[in-house]
Image 1 (tube, one colour):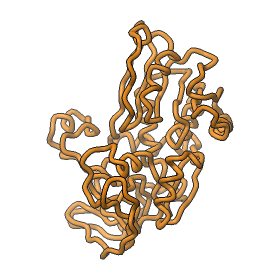
Image 2: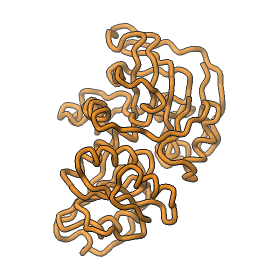
Image 3: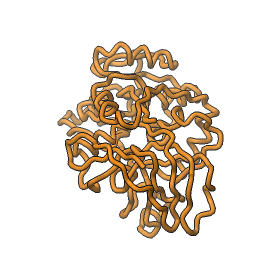
Image 4: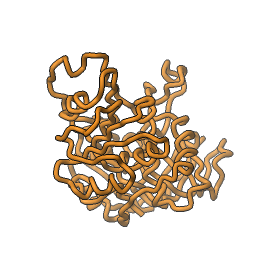
Length: 326
């Protein structure tokens, strides 16, 4: 099989040939059809996330076909299309797993970070953390759902029943969440990089009520805001934009330091909360809702060997929606 491997933090990925992997107990082998490129992949490559398994094959928004099963696996069957997300394994024994909060597991494995991921022609996955996708005929369109969609969904649930919701950082996750919000009858206010007219136009084309720079105030007071951009400066800006009792959700796995801000921005029962990883229940819920909501992902495709180019384009904001390796 072919893989794009990170050998050292900050280096470019290297194309390598490896023997096809053999799935172990409880595992499946997936022939990768598509793998979306996530900002978290940038955080892994750039060293923003500590202690990756090196060398590592990045990629955790995987859609592909099961082509081998390890012992003890009945589902998913060989030939089934599945999605493989960021959360690749949990211990099932720590207090968080036992409380139904497996996203906070003390001994997790993460696809593309602590176990090899989908920037490859094949990947090994824990069968319990691979999700059947029988209704998703286009693997390229489906790949961004496996992280941008799932984390977006968990963030939206965390935001509560907000009717006017702001999305800071209009990238892969926000362009999916915006469509779900519109289906639910919410008003969406999109905050883009200042001066990014293409992102603003993309947001408006998806039914957002307003689009402007992250340095602007929205035309209405928000009930809640979700921050997808890894920029700590946006936290006080979002607090300023939400009403009394409003909530600011930080949806990323990494963010630059939050600057000091006056207590009055937090007062009147505003709150800040983070979202970590996902649960299998999140995936089950969202993969059922996405077709009902008519979610259509905007994608730019790259061959597997152009993974470094895709990462560079993501870092520079050169496309709308999501990059997908095929």
